Length: 260
Image 1 (tube, rainbow, N blue to C red):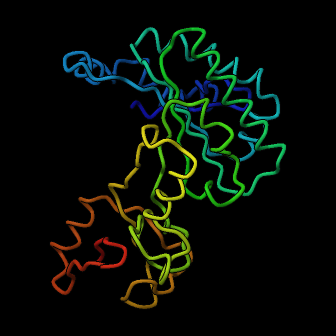
Image 2: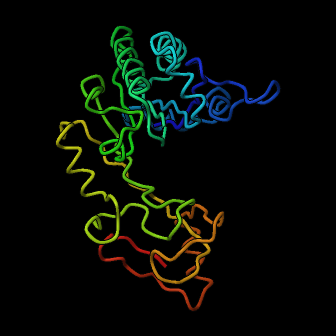
């Protein structure tokens, strides 16, 4: 999956961040930075997916205000890109993390269904959508029950149960914990998803990163100092362990996730 191109409020791909600066995803796709990526895919017969993305709530609100027209704009822009570079899947990653009105949810479903119709008409391949497990239990923008037949794959983003703005430290993707420590966990998310979605359509998203915080204690779920959270790569964690003589990795046996 190429991550990715940014969707504007009218459904068109964002090409410039300002009049003199190219949008990074668009620039990388068009200036040869991805040549080795495409060559590797061709040589190894790897199927390619193009991800289009938005996480800005105001942009998303405008995007779904005219769902059919904006879906047509999006496909009008991505169809030639997919055909030129050999993408055979379109990944729709619209990340709204607030409760949505019934009308907003309906409009988003129309947007997705229109995209699927156009993908099929133009023989572009398959349609994938990314969704937080939270949409299974709360009225967020994505109504999986309504759109499950309009998409070929659903990536369940089973991560960020704790994240950089969390009030307490804790696991990014706890396997268990609902009965003791968590509002929601990955095992429950999968169980709930299977009540709605066919198993063959589900792709489980897992995190290859962690978070670090300044906290008031050194045990899991210690209170966090506001604004101190940062993403932590695997290399960052290895460096901390190498440099800190008093640090050691431990296992949260409920979450089945390591921490230090």
